[in-house]
Amino acid sequence: MIDNEKHLLDKAKKGDIEAFEQLIAAYQKKVFNIALRMIGNYDDASELAQEVFIRIFKSLKSFKEESQFSTWIYKIATNVCLDELRKRKNKNLVSLDEDIKYDDSEIKRQVEDNRPTPDVTAEKNEIRRIVHEAIGALSDDYKTVIIMRDIQGFSYEEIAKIIKCPEGTVKSRINRARQALREILSKKRELLSGDYVK
Amino acid sequence: MKNCNEIMEMMPQYIDNELDGNARTEFEKHMANCTECKRELEEIINIVALCGDMSEEELPESFRSDLHKKLLNVKAEEERKSKFVNFFSKYSKLGSSIAAVVLIAILARGLWGGLNFSHSKASTESKSSYDITANSGTKSQAQDQLSQNAVNDSKPSEPAANSVMEAPAAAVQDNAERTMAAKDENTQKAVKQMAKGDSSNVKMKSFTTDSGKSSADTKTAEAQESSTKPSRSGTGDTRYGTAESSPIVNRNIEIAFTVDKIEDTQDKIKTIAAANEAQLQINTEASITAVTYDAGNEVDLNFKVKNEQYDKFISALKSGFDPGVFSAGSLNSVNMDETLVTLGTRLNEVNNLINDIESKRTEGDQETLDKLKAEENDINLQIQNIRRDAGYTMVSLKIVKKQ
Image (cartoon, rainbow over all chains, first blue to last red):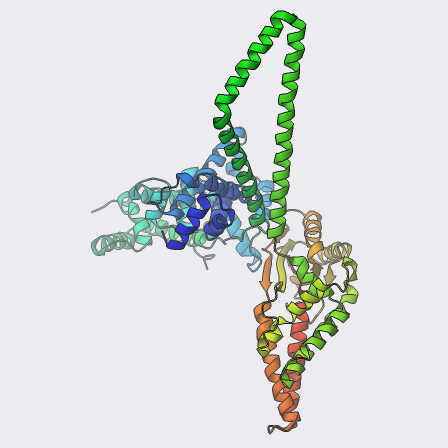
């Protein structure tokens, strides 16, 4: 842990909100994007990412400084997102199929919520929508590792620490997750052929 | 010799270039001979690339301020809890003694005064405990109010940027007069030029006068001062260097509409814009390029809207179209202070050169002089545009015909 981070952490532990905000500044965007990909909805992801930081603020005192602060943050972020996904499934047992199928209105809502970057073409937006939708249809475990590895670019080692799994398990899970994604996307052969990969 | 499943287990390492010599050779050899595995590998590589291409979204605009507010509430709540715990542990012994005395008193009175009396007393006790709760509720509200104030205090001061726009001519004049004290003659000229630019800003106010902000108070004069800071920094005049300055911020956002009929959408957007005081920019001199463009399958429309009106305009656009049609990028806020400093510095240089040529201190033909004067005008225009756009958001709309 670098000195400045340590200094801010000490202050934040004593309830200094400004120090806490400085401490988390570098992680906010990534946590928000993890939540966005896990939950699929812009506004909910924003709420959830805030919830992550509230939990971190509340439990700062329990943070053991021998572990890395960033790993701890992403661990909490992943847990909060997985909790939320579980809660949603429990609430909407009947609509589980809909979750997987992503009916038209759901897709439209998500596209709107995701606010794709403006400089991309409509085609690229469409591809992203399809991939986003396919990731959404993965099981929570697969979804987590795909988001961590292939979207957020975490290393196997980091993912292993975040999800508390041996590195070997992470690798094979990522392998299976990619194959599951391939299966879901198999209807969109043209996507897999590489013509759209730029 | 490994079978297909065993080879496929090696795929993550192969994709990440983590396979060592022998394993890599074996993997590649298998791929060269097994069409099915090769196809799977290619598809997985494409999937990894597609995932890597998922855009990283910007944080929602209100994310930080919302979180700040929540953190303040959490802190206030925790402080209240810890105060209560402290109070409780400190007075728990005393409290239990008092409770015991009260209980004995009630029982004794109950015994002597009969059941009715003890009942009414108990009600009184209950009421007083309610009052305590009510008081603590009020305190909590007060803390919330405090938190709210703190949030408001920490918000970036956009209105200050607006006040620059609204600065009265008197303040500009005052500023120009104060800068006359500058030692260097050329510096004076440069600063006057900047003040001239400000006067133009005041003229621009004619189409944005509805904000109802008050005029020539000290504060706006100060804001005006800080708005000329870039030029002074350029001249090396540090008299106002320590003054607090509000950043000049230009905001912009891009929104795409994917529709069947471009013309209908265009008309609808224009109607919504007119109702929300968003001004259509046609081939403007705005600092952010804003040119209406029509190329058959795609139309660009650019609007300039006051920051105060922005949310209303965007909500109106959003609710005016089906969800799949509208997709917005993130709102960008660009701090233009540095650009203003650069422009101010160059303006100074140009002014010095013009002055030197005109006063025949240096050699220079008419052509050079004309070029310098053109550059001077151009820089003044750029400065003026940057200032004019502060307090506004440029909304660039791209209407794309559905394929």
